[in-house]
Image 1 (cartoon, chains in turn green, cyan):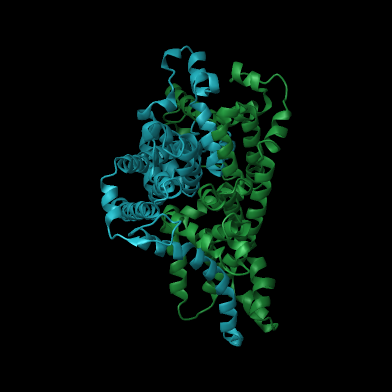
Image 2: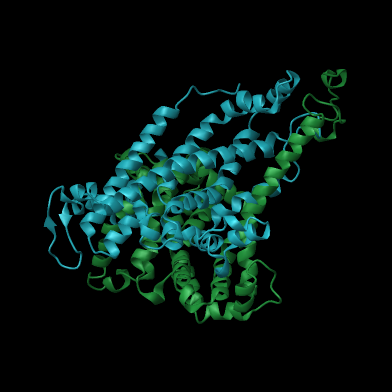
Amino acid sequence: MTATEAGPRDPGTDEPQRKPRVRQPGVGVGGKAIGLLNGGFLLLWGLITTLPLLWAILSSFKTNGEFRTDPTGLPGGIAWDNFARAWNAANIGQYFLNSVIVVAMSLTMTMLFGAMGAYVLARYDFPGNRIVYYVFVGGLMLPVFLALVPMFFVVRNMGNLPIVGQFLGLNSYLSLALVYVAFSMPFTVFFLTAFFRTLPNSVAEAGIMDGCSHFTLFFRIMLPMAKPGIISLALFNFLGHWNQYVLPLVIMQDGDKRVLAQGLGTLAANTGFRADYTALFAGLVIALMPVLIVYLLFQKQVQAGLTAGVLK
Amino acid sequence: MSALRHGKYPFILTFLIPPVGIYALYMLSPYVQAIYISLTEWSGLSANQKFIGFDNYVEMWNDDQLRTALRNNLILLVVVPVLTLVLGLFFASMLNVGGRGRSQAITGVRGSSIYKVVYFFPQVLPHAIVAIMFAYVFAPSNAGGILNNILEAIGLGSLTQLWLGEPKYLIWIVVLVMTWAFVGFYVVLFSAAMQSIPRDIYEAALLDGSSRLTTFRKVTLPLVWDTVQVGWVYMAIQAMDGFAIVHIMLGVNGGVQGAGDVLGVAIYRAAFADYDFGYAAAIGVLMLALTMTIVVLFMRVLRRERVELA
């Protein structure tokens, strides 16, 4: 150990990066080699992560001839026609629209109803408060697959109700959205209850002094204050709803009502027969775009929101 | 909120009814019904739902295909979390405390934030996309087959296989794909935990001349152990799924000879291909029992003394 590194620190340069380079134990030639090796592993995993995606994107630009003769090569040009075929002939346009409709409804309802429930559970004392809370949170442990069969019948039977039945049966956007809402409730209520508890009482009390009703207190004061929590949870739920595969498979059995992930799965299954590989990859890229855009725009919040799910 | 006693209960009811109502109707009631349906024989189409006691459970015991699915789920349950957490810890410690050579204190390596962005991305991808991509990674050379083409390009052409045509590989391919999808999440999770470890602990370890491995074993690991533990349970629950990946990559029958089957796909098949809804519900109950066992087991086995940071 050298004297320099054990010496007193210069208080002006507290940031480690600005410190002079000195030899450390384990930073000799051997340390360098380990460092390079580590860097190599990191780079390797980066390549393993990105290469399949890049390959899929490149394949979406190729013609089917190029794809078959040289699957790992670069495309000669950009075959935009793939995207047109995916959007129209392979019905990805319809599936995309279906996904947008369902997720718009389910996300709005999840956040609104989830925030309402969580707010009341977090800030009001009433008999049964704890029971309701634990019934919500208990749902976190239940595997979706156990509910699959009876849920199918619940939705089918709702379709037989007079008047409202026409909106609530199988193959209905609203039904699928409501199912998403139900399955998102445990985590949404759990997360937002914790969040509403952290909001200061003083602001709420000031609102009451100003003569707010319970409703205006929630919509005008508490909800805007909970915005950070609401946003990270909305991102979490958006990804969950947009990516959902098994629930729509059960509820949207009619071909025209399929959502994007589900439609893409069907397209992949049929691609072998149609021999139109590049349209499949074009469809895949179309489905990838919304997720990629949301991720790149809100990368920090998405990471924080998703990992918070484990840490809470 | 004593000043607002007026109208409190109507307000509470108005706010609770929509979330509780939707949750009870579409999520809770199915779970309650599932138990009863599992005790019946029911094609779902007729009103004729016959109570048969535990016959479905006896049938499960004798069902070889289900045994394959169960075995595969157990493989996913054990191998995927181990692989994911080990790789996650490895990369997270590389990223956060691996950059030892460049400065006096221990820091992250260069570009660690870019690595985190890239590594995490598979977590936000729909599993449908992941499954389609990897179906082509493992496809034969003349149908895309990235892996086979890469093997041929680097002179290992003799190793090429019809990966998805060989029953014994199927579940391991699913293991790899799930690990691929999940590692980045745990890198970010563990990075956050490692960031909260005070730097001076590392500086002290450095002054004591402890090697990277010792530092990791004696400092980093104990201090992120709580997170690893929670991550393990979470990962195990996620590994129970695998539905979209198996359903799309291998098909509704679980691939060649059904060798890549998992419980989720078995439930779906029993219900919506064979119209044997009672049996499907019974497999669902099995899955619930498995999930509960895991949660309790992991909680007990992994509980260690908490390390408190002063």
